[in-house]
Image (tube, rainbow, N blue to C red; front, side, top):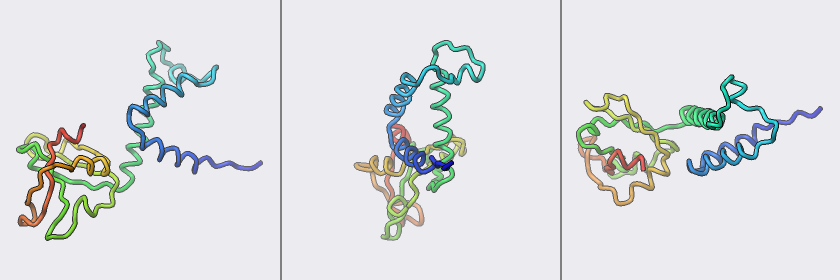
Length: 165
């Protein structure tokens, strides 16, 4: 009997799926759930939950997929920035140049950026995780300032709330 490996197909699917917006992911999961073959293996019944039509099995599947996505992100490359002034200013700094040379977001190869919020309000208990491409798209029109490294660094300032839009 020939052994079949689904790993390459699954990896391509994961890459494709991770690029979808939340709305598309939810719509796809809903479609798959609504068009699943019957009789089916109901996760709620398998786990011993009463099937109330609440969509628990869909929510569970989405939660498990989100856990896997986060696990994949954390296993990969992440640019981590700790910002102590965000408590005072509400701004996050995104460096793009230092000593007249590209640096920070201009040179980072990490597909994900993590901002660890520090200072009196946050004390490193809040982390914002964002895809680099999404962050780059938010920098247009952002205020550029000098600071850090003896004022040799150039950085964009973004309101922390902007990263959640």
